[in-house]
Length: 428
Image (tube, rainbow, N blue to C red; front, side, top):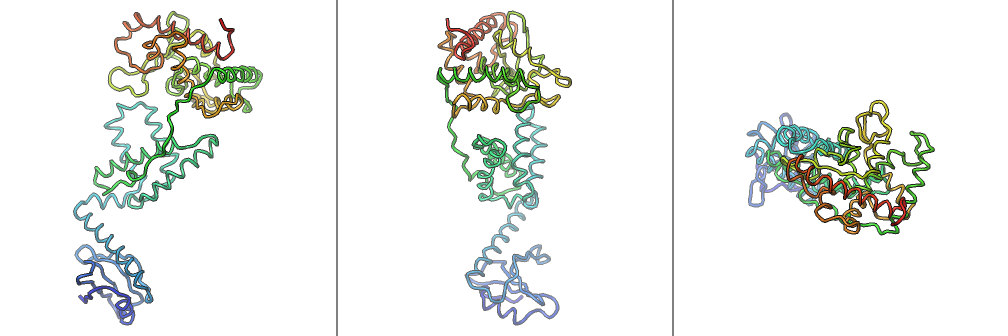
């Protein structure tokens, strides 16, 4: 085979002057500065640069080389050939790399999810899996689902990081979208790390992109802010009571009632309240009114779930929520039959805006409860149990018998305390 010390613009021009008459021929680099395997393929009408594979039976074309190419442009093409040669060598050493470089992100996610469900889903709640699926369907697959794994570079991941907040703000203009972007990046990192373990990738591009720095949501409301929120909340309830169920100009009475329960209890409003079922509500008229949450955040192993203790007004609010046909079993039904109210973000934002409260997500009421439990005279250990900072340490029977009444009493005490701050009840 013809060989040259190095492929230069002069070599390319000579190749164009001696194009193949019939079968193509090759010009290989061979010398001190040569890239081993880099070659020109001379055809009847053009000259290509690339490398041969499978013992010369195959050809990887990088690009057609123009006859007037500059030395800088040619050197850049030679480096591209080097990358292809290294890729081929890697695939020969690790056959799974060949499979991975032909796999799309959508195919990778499907393979990862299948294994994840078979090996780890028992340790994840259904809602956690739903959240993972949402991040992929709403953001990651939409943005990069059709790309091959080799096409997902660090630059692509940076673009994802910048794009997701914009996508979130389209639906929720008041949201920053940084938390959603961070959650999506973590999901991408997990799936691509699995791809590395399977031998589909040599590196994970998600590992080289930092997540957004976000401040912890530790904002706590002052008493005057709570009073302002209470005034707006009462006005909204009065307006909602006069509106139809499908009215959109004000939060629904169902959402406002659920918000009140979240305010009274400091609960995690989605997984512990909104997404619950009516049968979770235990002893609504008994001595220990509570919601039995099957699984609480962060809890694994045998001590799963917790009790959400309720005051009298919380029970009254939950029982007063209408449950139309198709939603009879839901604790807090949404507008669509058979589906729960998804979240309270928009409801609280509506209240907060009119109360002049800024920078306070719905979780602010959880922080308010943690702060004001002491002011209400609730013991620290009871506060931890009310907020779910501890799992159930002993059997339900013993736990309810010994601690249930005192926790129910503590829940009622805090309910009355926060209602006085809201302005619903007169101060003692």
